[in-house]
Amino acid sequence: MTNALRVAVLPGDAIGPEIMAQAIRVFDIVQKHRDVAFDLIECPFGAGAYFSHGTAFPEETRTTCDAVDAILKGPVGLSHEESKIIPVEEQPERGAILPLRARYNTFANFRPIFLSRQMAHFSPLKESIIGDGIDILLIRELVGGLYFGEKERGVNSDGQRYVREVLEYDEIQVRQVLRVGFEQAMLRKKRLHNIHKSNVLMSSVFWNEILDEVQQEYPEVEVIHLLVDAAATALCLNPGQFDVMVMENMFGDILSDQGGGILGSLGLMPSACLGPDKAYYEPSHGSAPDIAGKNIANPYSMIGSVAMMLEMSFGMKSESDAVWQAMKSVFEAGYSTADLSARSDMTLVSTVEFGDRVMDSLDALLR
Ligand code: IPM
Ligand code: MN
Image (cartoon, rainbow, N blue to C red; front, side, top):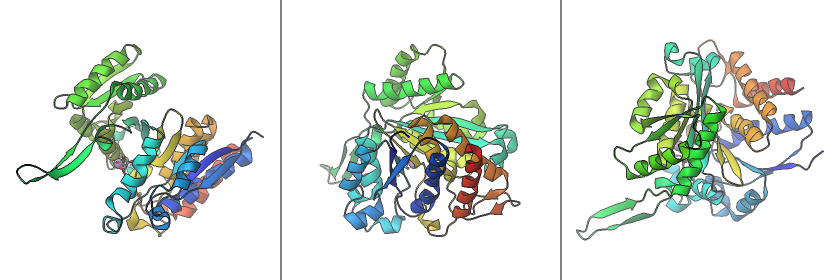
């Protein structure tokens, strides 16, 4: 037996602990069948951590995250109303998620927008548009742009309040994420959609200049340039044209939620956030306080994030494939949860029961 792989587990807020409880069962099943051991270390993170520790990203969580091999993060945050009790700087989005991304420089955010043909009924799109299913890899720059630029508020010389926030990228930041886009395109269909807004934004003109340079390194990849607003329309009208898409932080935030929309739910969106030395994995959605505690949230995005970790951090591709397969088979067997707009002939089960079925299937697949 090799040394245990250490994973920091940050369950988060609202539905976070419910879907996390299902996701971490995957580690048990994998270690039961394979010569590998996982050491899971649970850490406070998010609004709950603010109430228990006075900060949304406590020092002890930072120390653990520094030491582990990978981080599994659940969704964090409270409802808009409840959030108001927390000072703006400590609200978990600003006080926990962004510092986590910055700490590990997780510049490459992989957001697969995937729906098998058998799962097509979850999508609001017509079957004729979905065709054989949807299979897009959206790559979002995650540690630059407006999210991390200088911010300032004040009163100007006319006595009017104003705000200023800066969209900044240097060429290293742009090049490194574009390379990830090209590398993934090489592994897939050798087609890369570059999403930008160079008809207005200087930052996009700059981005595209760097892209032209990086493209020289990947002559086999066909690059298609598309304005971000047009890309929003195209994702609805013809998602099949996309394979790998790459874009800056804010564009990626918005278009990846639209990705969840064309699948039928953000609950179908896991993600991986990769830095030079460390990666963390999280659902692309929020903590859904409105359905918390009801045992109805689908754990797909959280379990899918474990699948991505197995492949991308631990090189366990076949085990990762088995996790995806297990989840697909549960849907295909006609089971879903109440939070997904399921076909009327599906049997709705709880979060825990959905997890049970995925784990049974995974157990059989790894045997
Ligand atoms: C996401 C989320 C975050 C973001 C928020 C919660 C900070 O919406 O991961 O897409 O905007 O990046
Ligand atoms: Mn988002």
